[in-house]
Amino acid sequence: MRFSAALVPGVTLARGVSAKSTEGKRSGRPNVLLVVADQMTPLLTGLYGHPVVRTPHLNALAEKGVLFDAAYSPCPLCAPARACMLTGTYSSENGVYDNAAALGCDQPTLCHHLNLLGYDTVLSGKIHFVGPDQLHGFQKRLLPNIYPADFSWTKSRDHKIPKTHARSYLGGAVHVGRSGRNIEYDELAHTEALDYLTHKGTQNRRDTSYQPFFLCISYNFPHEPFWPPKKYWDLYEDEHIEIPKLPPGFEKKHSAMDRWLNRHHGVDKVDLQKPSSLLKLRRAYYALVTYIDDKVGELVARLGADDLMDDTIIIFTSDHGDMLCERNMVQKRCFYESSARVPLLVVSPHAGQEGHVSKTPVSLLDIAPTVLDLVGYNGSESFAVDGVSLVPLLNGQEQPGRAVFSEMHSEGVYATCFMVRKGKYKYIYIHGHDEQLFDLDKDPDEWDNLARRAGYVSIRSELKECILSRFDPDRIEKELRENLKKRQFLTKAMSKTGQDWAFAPE
Image: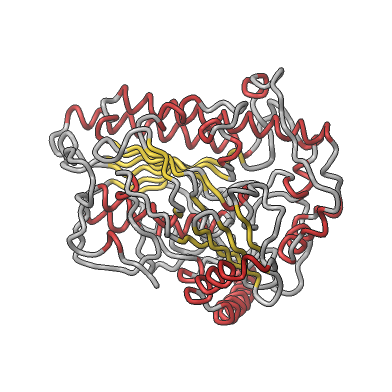
C-alpha cells in the first residue's frame, strides 16, 4: 500500500502538534535547512550515545528537537537514497536502482512542491543526479557535479567486475591532513552555504518581501577515502577505540547477499582484520564524524548570527551508513544496522517535543511529507508517496506497529533484496536465496539468525508477507534488467558523440 500522507489537499501542521505559530518573520512560512552527511552510521556518533565520538553540536541540537532512534535508508546506496528522500518514493517506484540510474524529470520532488509555495530552493554540495535534468526542482545548484551525470557507472547484472573499495579500509589508506577531492568539495560547499545564509539574513532584515528558503547542504564525509584533517585526528590521540569483534566461524553466518557484496567490494583480496589497521581506520572515521559535527555547528551559528534560527526547521541525516569492517564487510549496500540505519534529527521551532527520542521505525522517505506538513502545505495536486509525515512522532505520538522497508537490487547483488523493520524485529529477504530474521533487542549485532527457528515461524511469515504484499520481486527484476540494457546501450551511443550531462552552475 502506498500513502499520500501530507501531499493530499487539506493536510496541515495541525495533526496533534502543540499550538505554536507557523509564521516566519515576514514570509509566513519557516525556512528549511536540510543537512546530509554521506555514509554516516548513527552507531558511531555521540548523538546516539557513543561514549567516545564527539558530536557536541548535534547533541545540543537534539536537546531542541526530536531524535529518531530507528531511521533507515530506503536503499543503502548514495544516488538511490537521495532520490528516494527527495521524491518520498522507493527506488523500485522511481527507477533509481543504483548510482548510474536516472531520476525521471516527470518525478515530482519536495523542491517542486516548495517552489509552488514561493520557496527559494537551493543545493550546495553532493547530490548525485544522473540524467539531463540536474535540478529536479532546485532553483539553484551552487557547485558542479562531483560524480558522473551519465550512465558510465552502469554495472552488468551478471558479469560483475570486483572493485577495490576494501583497500580504502586498510590502515595504510588513511592519510591525516592530506588534501583531496572530498575535503576540497566539502569545504567549498560549506562556504557557499554559509554565504547563502548570510545573504538570506541580510535580505530578512531589509526586505519586507522576504522569500523563505529550502537549503540542502550535502557533504561527502565521512565517506572514504578516510583522510581526516589533523585537527580532528588529534582529538582522538588518547581515546579508547573499539574495533569489530568477529565470532569463530563468522563466515558461515554470511548470507548470499554478504558474499556477493564482499566480492563486489574486493574484500577477499585484502586482510581487514589487523588490529593496528582497524584502530587507525576507526580513529579516522571518528575524526571525520566530528568534522561534520563542526560544520553543523557553524551552520547553526550562522543562522543565529543572521537572526534566522527562530524561523528555520533543521533536519540532519545521512544517505546510509558504513559497515566499517563489521562482519568483515565494507561500505554499504546491505541491510545490517551499520549500513542501512541512518541518523535522523528534526528540530522545528514550531512543533515537536524538545529532547524527545522516538523509537518508532522511520525512513528517509518520510522527510519530504514531513517538511511539507511542517510548512503548512495545502497543495491542489496529490501524488502518491511511500513516506508519511513524522509530525505526529514529533509530538510524541509513537506508532509501534509501523513497518519500514529498504531494498537493494543492483550494483553488487545478483537478486532482488529487501528488508523490513517492525518493532524489535528485522527481516531480510533475498529473492530465491536466503532469509534472515533478527531480534535487535536481544541481538543488536545481528549474528543470531532466527529465520529457521521453530519459535519464530509466525513473525517470519508475517514480515515476509509484509514485503511480498508491498513489492513484486520478479517484476522489479524484469524492469531492472530492461533498464540496465537500455543504459548500457546509451552509454555506447553517448561515448561516440561525447555527450555529457554534467552540471556547472552559471
